[in-house]
Length: 338
Image 1 (cartoon, rainbow, N blue to C red):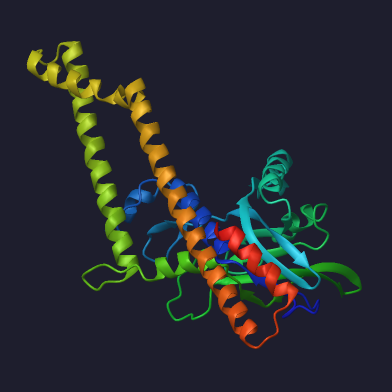
Image 2 (cartoon, rainbow, N blue to C red):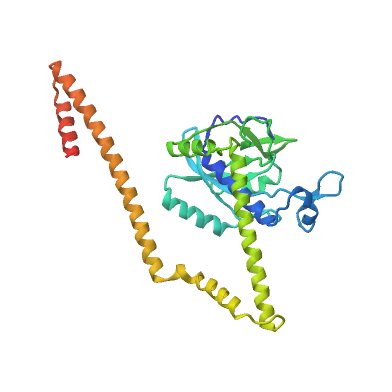
């Protein structure tokens, strides 16, 4: 792999791509380890298939998974702007892509974003590997020069830069044989107004006790996990008790059965017609409020624009230079205000 690219392309990466890759990796890692235990219970994870030794203490920890997907965006001249991404179905053992899934996702994104094209692909890892060239070449029939976005999921508190690298492929002659290799390219973070607001909101999330946003999120997720775990354990105990009662192992208690029946009657409550009517009414009211707020903002912006035109027209008329162009603009602004 060469040190830097010589193509002269300028890459602009949007935060949404980084968030999508991080979310993809987190979901896959959680699915591979559904029962994440604290550090002192690591012996319970020995049955994981993807495991590797962690030091010399005999404790086994799972290997971090790798995720794959496509990045989409636009290219204008020598500037490549990566806006979004979606997942790919890729089999690392056979180095094969699910073409049907890729074409379907591409078709769906073209309907929503007709100006976006597949610019390349993404993955996770500490560095680009030789096996990554297989999926890189597989996408060359869609983009003759795809880009490779690599996210390093390892946490390094001393690192100040984003753990994201962008690679291009260049044809180099090595030992008399032309070969495609990955070369590192520089990039800048580009944001639109909505992304800046979202990132700023997430970055400033802090609990009332002065802790970090990560601490608040961890506490919130821990509380949800504990609540779901407690609910599951209680339902499991109740289920075993009903099975034992059905088999005759425990005496039948009508009062308990009535309580269980009362709980079960609440389950299909959200499927009733009354619930659907109430839900749609509430949903429509929310949409109307949002639409009214949008109209109010548009009217406010239009009023400000009209006031600016009126001010400019009055200032111009005082100088005695009333032009037909400003007169048409004034008429247009008054008509839009009415």
